[in-house]
Image (cartoon, rainbow, N blue to C red; front, top):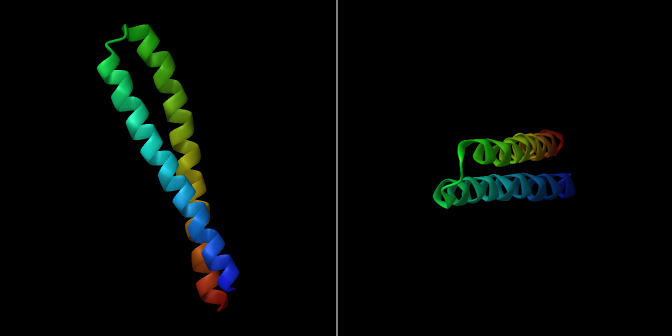
Length: 71
């Protein structure tokens, strides 16, 4: 079960890193001074990645909790 805990921690960390990428991406978009339509189109990409990152980090945390309970 130790492997499940460490694998879950790695998956959760990957999700957190993807969230950090989303933050940096959006900050760069805001500073770019794009027109409204282009900004919205590019922000949609960030929203999709953000939801996926949240799902991945949640899955990783569930793996950690399951590994702790089964230990």
